[in-house]
Image (cartoon, rainbow, N blue to C red; front, side):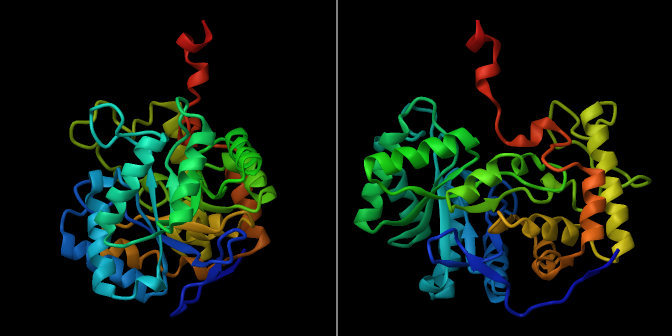
Amino acid sequence: MGCMSEMNTQQPTTYLGRTGVEVSRLCLGTMMFGDWGNKDHEDSIRIIRRAIDSGINFIDSADIYAYGESEEILGKAIAEHGRREDLVIATKFFNGMKEQPNYRGGSRRWIMQSVEDSLRRLGTDYIDLYQMHRPDEHTDIDETLRALDDLVRQGKVRYVGSSTFQPSQVVEAQWAARENHTSRFVTEQPPYSLLARGIEADLLPTTHRHNMGTLVWSPLAGGWLSGKYRKGQELPTARRGSEKDPFDLNDPKTAAKFDAADQLGALADDLGVPLVHLALAFVLRHPGVTSAIIGPRTMEQLESQLEAASLELDEATLNRIDEIVPPGTNVDPGDAGFSNYWLDSERRR
């Protein structure tokens, strides 16, 4: 087995679905900037600036990240950068921003308010890609798409997308947009990693058929592919206040994930590359994937990931990965990113 890793001063780019917009294959995620991660605003801005200087032109956020604080940090970084037009800025709406009713979801009422809030926090007059963070079972997709179409017509939003939709929901949204002559979702944002390959079975073929860009989140499987989860090494402790130890190897699903992560780490060792690079290169290798969203909390974490998009994996390496985690499967079903509430007992009885 062999592979090649070379540093590019300019990050590789590709087209965002059929929009004609060119984006870096690594997309900078901002969830870790602010109260949920790096609380130092100036340090977070330095990380964003370093990512931009490396050639990353695609940055993804969401209103819910630290309840708006992450968007505010990104807005400061954009202002310091001074060339808004060079960047493709994506953000998301849906999750509850307050405990009161009507501050969440896919209703026209909330979309019209949430976009104004995001524009203010980002310090910009338009959002390149405005995404629905999760499907909304309480709102007709027609209403959501009509509201988003109005934002596109007003120039406040360039394109719209979805996140963590199931294949049937992706198709429904595409059909509704065509039927009602509204803007359609041009992207989908699902979870995808060496340990969570479930989207290969149906979602990625679906987005490919509809000419959608696919931006994958959690390509490092929430840290499981950072290289820290190896046999003979001390596992990280549970987060403060956590009711459950996420690294309890008595749990069969956790044990299976740990074993797979260890085997993948050994494969990376054989190739002479960091496991982080192997993990990111793998998800970018799939022809249905546009960009992988990286979410560094520190400058060190960012620097450790910048070279990954230039790593080429050969057939022998890909075959070995398939042996460790079969195509189209999630080692832990809980990593699918979507909990099918229709299987809850109260829905079935």
